[in-house]
Image (tube, rainbow, N blue to C red; front, side, top):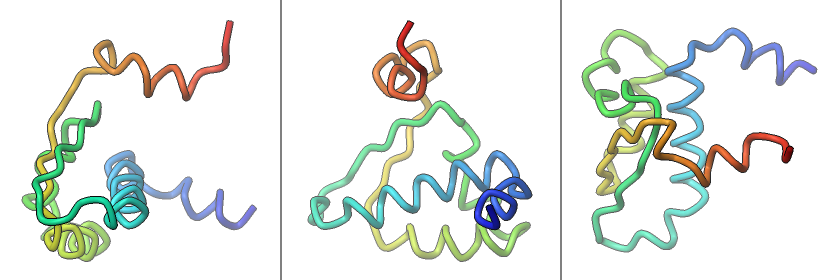
Amino acid sequence: MFYEYVHQRKSTTEKEALALLIAVRTFNVYFGSTVVTMYTDHSPLQFLERMAPHNAKLLRWSLELQQYSLDVQHRSGKQNLFPDSLNRPSE
């Protein structure tokens, strides 16, 4: 319950950035030295480094993500059929 309360107070950008950070922490063993392209339907994540100086959490997370070669690309929700299907109950 406390976990849900803490995360309710985060902005959408903070929630999306946290999801990106958790994914990178989980799968970084597979990255190697290659550039990894991350697709997101939340376009502000492309500009995480520019937003970071205005938010301490985003700054810490951005600094952690800088150690990886990430290419964050925006893809609209309509084009993200597979990930969206995982989030929605079957009809």
